[in-house]
Length: 136
Image (cartoon, rainbow, N blue to C red):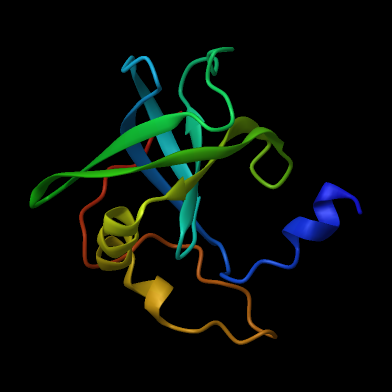
């Protein structure tokens, strides 16, 4: 089955966001980037610079999001790496660990609301946080 067909059968809908972050790859090298979409269990992240070749599937990663209440750290595992046509960018799909799932749900309350099948997901960042936007 094509990878695209599998991606369309997601359990949790994606919500487009544009949130500037600092993330660390498996070698703990900090990189600036942006979370481009978020779901109940993961994020798609794009590096501001070229994505290092040594970032691969199965790598652990930490992502720091700075909010008006201070930095929040989330973590997970790289589950996918490649070109994302909807974002027109090369990035990584990160599956969040359990503590990070709870943090992301607080940062993006839209994740707690079910999205009707006929309505596209909200594409704006959470209004409850003052999250920085990546400048292009």
